[in-house]
Image (cartoon, one colour):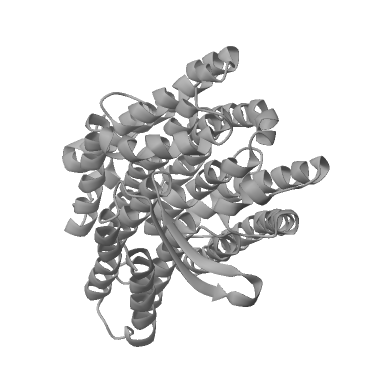
Length: 481
């Protein structure tokens, strides 16, 4: 019941906030939201390093159960989702002050987090698809009704693109059921008997669904608008964890797509490399801080795509660890962007300089996130990036790995340019007139900075659960090494 309760508690709290929270203050709503996600976080810690499966009768006539599974592959991203959800709720107390219909905002935030959390725990394909679609509804509402500037247009674009990807996923799930007679993820491998053409179609459609969700080039065009126009706490969730669910799904489903998936490995690695380069170059060209971080997400998803695309032990290990490292680093940077918006009234980096003198804690935290995403020791991103590059070497694609490693310096370039432009130099007028952000925003930022260091210094906490899970998935086809 632990996993089921960890989903039901936030859903019920979110429903209660929506129905009865209209007269509540912003601070109270934010606190309730944070606690409703902190409780599942505590429950998730109870199943650390243990494979936990819970099965409940659901669509009995079709033999479909509601199954939740926490193992080494799902546990780290589930942790990242709940961590960012909790901190986004706390951050919202300061950021969303004075906004309209806040009871509805916090309810949708909770529903969004719960849907992502349910997705990574799902052990049945139908259940997985339901959560996949449920993510869209609250996130679309959050973008469209509480976002910036062209929020409604960005929301429409977001839901059309991602729903289009969901259709591909649904077709592949239907074909898997047709040729296996089951939707249980654990039974498909043994029961799947599909002709070669059908198996190829299943793989292609699944990859399309996952890559659209990740925003990998050239299927990324929805991402910059959605992330840039969403309210900043929601940008934290969209960029920090939502896009990464596609990478998680690819590694989870690899168990029953191998060895046929192997022929697509070079293509997936190449797409990862192109995304790293394209996203990085586009980030360098931006003056809007949120659009820069949005394109940075395209680049960072390239790292996850590259690692997962190797279909190797180190590649999977690094890609999954990078999901977590990216959640911490990119979540932090979007929160820093929110400070610029609320305290300086601008997203234009050309109007901001010398911020480190005014806000040293924010500056230090941003520098930690930048170093982490650039793969600098001792940050979490160093562990993930060098492990996934080891996966590239392990795959035998030495030239592509070497090229990707060298060109990943683009990440350091645009990140360090951001730090130099915004935090150093003489204080601009916007910075001189700025006030220190509310405590709720500062605490959320500082927490992510500390975690980025801790998970770089002590990677064993996640690797201890990741290693056996990755070995199990790749061991299905005859071993890891």
